[in-house]
Image 1 (spheres, rainbow, N blue to C red):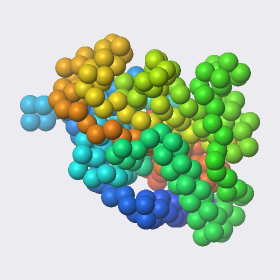
Image 2 (cartoon, rainbow, N blue to C red):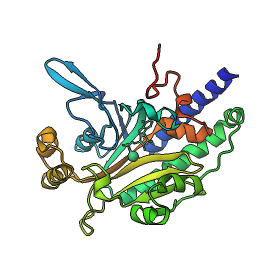
Image 3 (cartoon, rainbow, N blue to C red):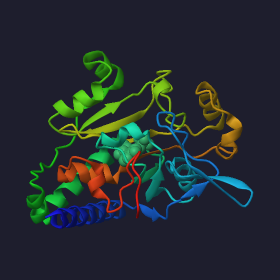
Image 4 (spheres, rainbow, N blue to C red):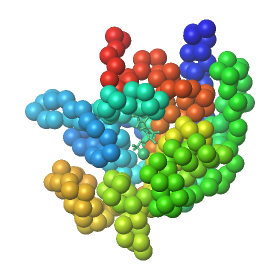
Length: 296
Ligand code: AMP
Ligand code: MG
């Protein structure tokens, strides 16, 4: 019984990945191989530990997200994506959230000269395409999992961060994810709650041109993304405002990057939502759950 359930989840993951690749290739994206080690990685102020290894007289981060490498890659190709393994040493207390692993995979994508509106529309096309494909090809798997899956309809509702906070208080994300009838966007995050690379709206200081997508039924955050700061002067200013050291991000500041926008969607959370699973751990054969030891 457990095997049947595991097999259904793994087959569904495969179908979802194929559907995502198919849509992105159809739209002209090129898949890149992931960067696993780098001297610089996403600072992620909201999470705990970043892991490093030492090799060849240098300290290497295990990738927390490919943000900086995506921004560099779109100088070469205008639409890229990557299935990027991420290591984030989340607090052991998050073992039971159902949403956190300390090794997970993001489908991370970036588009040169794109706007947040482009990314909102792409996120909707991508999720709808995946759900349609899974419903059509995985009816047996969905039956095994006892899951009824509805295809969401675009456009998904959008609610600015400050409005959501004013209406539902600090726990607005959980509230919205539980109450919403379908996926819902949070847009316009305040600069102080996000990373320095999300672009500040030139006409609204302190407000970012970024977004999160929330799944319905309480499954929580699906993806994060937005437009990027791309001028070295503005990036340096944002780094300083976050209390970070610009010297660490020297490679980012060396030259102006093309404007771009993108997002990263967590695969384990996507499959958790598709399958109606209690915990993302079930999506991986060898789950890395914060606080848990493993033998394989
Ligand atoms: P972030 O850059 O933190 O917004 O992460 C991008 C996406 O990766 C999120 O929207 C989630 O879908 C997924 N994600 C982030 N952290 C974790 C985690 N600890 N375990 C599983 N998925 C995660
Ligand atoms: Mg996020």
